Amino acid sequence: MTPMLMRLFRRLTPGTFKNRILFAFLLFVLLPIALLVVYNFKGTERVLQDNAAKKNTEQLEGFKNGFVDLMALVMKTGLLLEQDTSLRQAMEDPGSADDITRKKLVENKFAGIENTFFMTGATVYYTLIDLHGHAYTSFMPKNALDYDEIRAEPWVKQLQEQGGERYFWNPNDESVVIRESTASDRMLSLYLLLRDDNLKPFAYGRLSIDYEEWFSRTTKDGGQEGAYFLADGSGAELLASVPGEGISPAVAAAIARSAESGDAAAPASSVVDGKEEALYTYSRIQELNGYFVKKVPLALLFKEVDRQKQRFFIGFGAILLAFVLLTYFISSTITVPLKLFQKKMDSSVKANLKVKLPEHGRGEILSLTHSFNAMIDDINGLLERLRLEERQKQYVRFQVLLSQMNPHFLLNTLNTIKSIALEKDEDDIYDICVALGTILETTLNTEVDLIRLKDELVLIESYMAIQRRRFGHGIELRCDIGDELGDALIPKFCLQPLVENALLHGFGQSLKEGHIDIRATARGPHLYLEVADDGMGVERAKAKKVARKRKSIGVQNIRESLELLFKYQSTGLSMDSTDEGTRVVMHMPLLLSKPYLREEDDHDDDRDDGNGSGALADAARRG
Image (tube, rainbow, N blue to C red):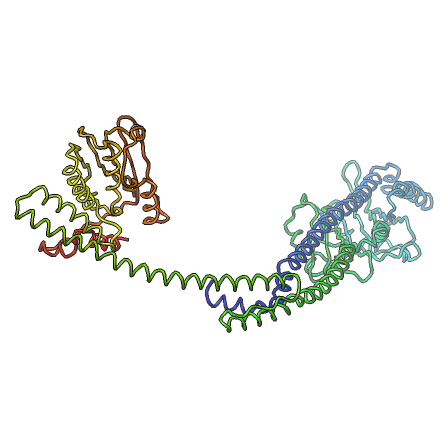
């Protein structure tokens, strides 16, 4: 997190403990619960909306099917009138009967046909005119029948046109029925051209459905569910079940776009008008090029959900208020003692941890006081131990400085013996002094823990030279290491104890010949060192119980040295002993320390003093 974001986070979050508790609970508990509940309410509203749209679609499909069936029935009655022979004769030959008889015949035909509409709940009004100046109706017209006026109406002229439609519908026909019969101002009229068997016109018919009355009667029971409309192809309202209700412009535009697409087989569609907050469902009437529309306010649709939502938020607000008060009360019981506890801790720190806190109070505060006082005791005890250890370190360092005087004196004495042996031509004594001097010089260099493998082998050769002079045995030391592994860094004196153990336990003080093999191999990032002998083995050596003046350097000591020098890295030491000999294998990280190359050899001597100090510096640089 960047410093800017960190500062912003600290500015937005409260600084005190109790306010942080309240903020965390509100942000991570109550707010997610509220969001989850709101999301569930939204999901419930979507389900209700989808169910309502499906229900409205089914309802409008029922309205549409009933309306289409009514139109088909009207069309069928028109065809029946056309095929009725007595009616056709009266229209084609009006002189075959007097006016009263002819009028009664036509009106009886109208009355018989009207009975077929009894089950539909719709009223159909008939108007017929022949080509001989006679007009007939099934209703009482507003004005007296005038044949010439009717024949001059646009629908008759449209039917008279050559190549014109034989029939067509008009959903906005003006009502010509007397007001006492119907209160509707508009009719859905079928204009029909009646023809004989020779396809010769003999009459013009107008079959008008009082669809306002049918629409009002059909939608009467659904008034509590919303408003119903009958709209034309442009979305303009033709009929409405609820006075004062209308179709919103957005929905009218959607209906117009649907009409322009001309997909008659498309199912009913639903759309939500966000401005009116209402759900609209509309279904196309292909035969009329119009739409049935249902409008349901969302408030009515989500009425029960809104009630549940209101109850939830009232309860949630009450719980939230109670929690805030309770949180402040509980946090105050914690933070106030903590502030006092903090002040006491500050005073104790200023007194250099010499003052303990008074153990008063109860509960967690009392436990904190006990813990703090115990911590003060532990810190004071630790400081006292540190001071004691520091004094002990100074004492040990002084003893080390004193002890270094004896090895130096021994080395100087050894050099004197070596000079005398050289003067007396005592080669054996001289060789022993050289070998022992090499070992002592390495021992005195206490600043180096790691030396190169080839330097360790020099020490072992010196050790073996002394042992050969001392016991006169023929133990052969064989080394198998590569040129590059000679510069590998290993712990000082890690191989010499293993060679010493091989001599003492493997061969004892016998004069038999034998071999001690030292091998070095690199395996990935690790160096493997192996010391093997063909002596008697550990078990036989124990059986013989070779007496020794000092305790043997154990394998466990070497393991501990490896762990101390190579902390948190892979090390190990294993031993395998049989009657044919003993084999010890150790591994450690592979560290190569090649000396720097100079144009003059004496610079090499300056970089590497023979004890591995130059190699250690190189290894440190190599990481």
